[in-house]
Image 1 (cartoon, rainbow, N blue to C red):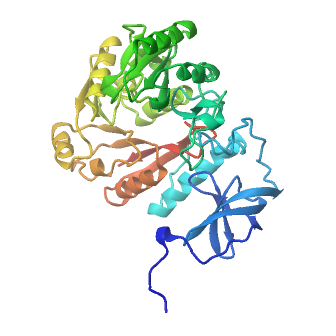
Image 2 (tube, rainbow, N blue to C red):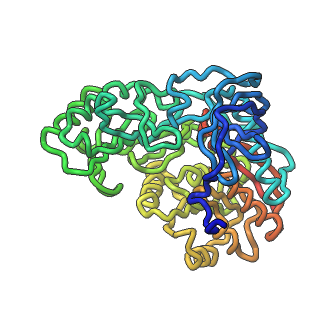
Image 3 (cartoon, helix red, strand yellow):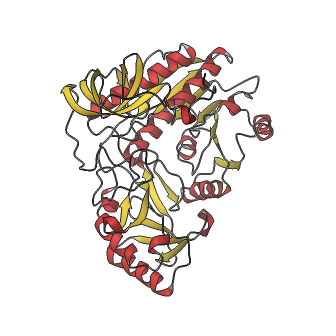
Length: 450
């Protein structure tokens, strides 16, 4: 008789996995792996694409599913292509370079469709065309890991490997802004010469339209020689250099000594938004322009409308909406972003936009907001956790139209179900935003009308 204890971590301690077997990939998982059923059990297969017949090599087993990888493709998908990056399959920065870009978008649309149907039996009346742009060199902000690995020659810089804390040493990156990617071959040499080379875990890159900034996160103080070396690097390569010994508030400019903010333009609205290197901005500049244009058009605000933009950040949507609406109000939890948004309004000569600080996950603050503001139209751009706390406290006379920009189809589907079935809205349109080509990350936009 056994002791009744389950194996730790849900693993099947007694199951012996076969070295390899054949399988057909049914669909893609949320993280871009193929999903197959092998002997009645789900297997997540790295490198597999829907419809393919593959030979699978098992890696490890859990109680409910197995982890595996493609050992050989026996019958390839017509959408399979050769990845251009030699690090693909190891580096965790991309998961779908082996899938044709148009097919990546179809798969993301399928994810959104499935989530809306499963959570609430919902489907938009028409689907919006996907917002997409170039699949390469699009990423204008990134956090690069740094490690000192003597066995691999010393300092390595890159993204984490898939499902691992190890770093992939990158000499080029097809998704990074070209200006940042060009620095990868020389950054390792720079860090190697610093006194804190083994206590510098991260370099954050941020790209404006005209300038690039690098923020060096260091866990011990920099020496005078370190500072000189970093400044010389910035001067030689024409990039801004910042040091960060602690949280975001500790970021200090090394070169130039007193730089102005970075900036990006929204030409459709004659706007330029300023930001600091560690501020949140949308990663893909061209897709962001398309999304802002689409969101403003879908909201259909006019001079008689008061528009509320929740989770507004730097004013990425608020300020374009102010060009159309009578009054635009942005709300954000981070006081630094609120001040930056106010400054962006001043810089662009916008007098009909205002910005407030409120924690939109705190019930008392949400209730207070709805008591003070009764908008005609509402725009939501929440983090991955969604906006259910805000929506559950909508006033009795709620906004006539809501445009919801989402970075998580699961929470969008959950919130959509609430809006439709509890608050009487219709889901009139929805579509995907290909903000992160070559990854499984799904961003989307949805429109709700009373």
